[in-house]
Length: 72
Image (cartoon, rainbow, N blue to C red):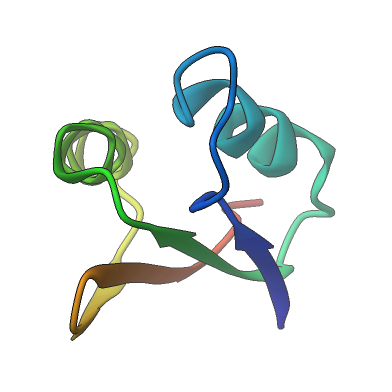
């Protein structure tokens, strides 16, 4: 599983590196996105639902994780 930590401060939204990681992942690759930004987390969940991608939400203190498999 490839883990992408999006908790470090960025000069822009954490959505940019998240989408980049999704685009660069191979079909069928397992991804885990780790966020601490509630708004970006909700936007990513909405995107995955619109793409018909099932995912797992994990809440660990201030961190939130989305685990899913990139659609073929």
